[in-house]
Length: 285
Image (cartoon, rainbow, N blue to C red; front, side, top):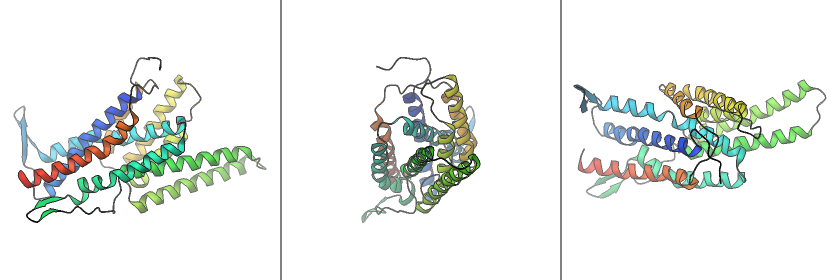
């Protein structure tokens, strides 16, 4: 049984991340669909404290809250990579859920199935953009290959330290570059910036076998650095730094969690958003 420690567990922070993602997808799957079907950004959605709140304002707030999700996912991917008992099984899970999530992803964010007099249309998937699991899978593969290269280089003796560092650096750069190119070719979520964020966290966060103050510092630097990379890919990426607050209180423990819940939440909730958007479009909008 895991020893109880003060602070937040991995389960707590992962739950925070998926709730953040849920709020983000309210904007991306529902509000964006409403606008795409003729809704006016400046329509009043509600009033609060004597002021009107428009759909545009709600959208901006939801997307800002959602920026903490991917940095959190990247960090726990890196941590999971270092501590998993089977990298092959980990990669297989990512691949399986990437496939499972793709059609719900397309329906919720791209094709928008609709109810018409002739039945439901736009059900065919569109492969011009891939879901977040593909990004995480490519990032995991990048870490795996880099890790194997590090082990291999550790067995070699170079004529000089400078030559060894040059060979290692160029090799790691080639793996990261190839992963970035693959992500852009497949048009996976967060594109090359997602891979770069994972790479930065991977190299900064090198476990030393204990959850010491040193590891806490490395963890914070890793998350900060990765989030800084992601900020370059999004106009509201600055809000991603909010993930540093829960990460500061992370106690290094997994907590009580069912890993398949966190995997399954993604395809299930976007499928529900796709169905909800279709029904709202037909009966309300």
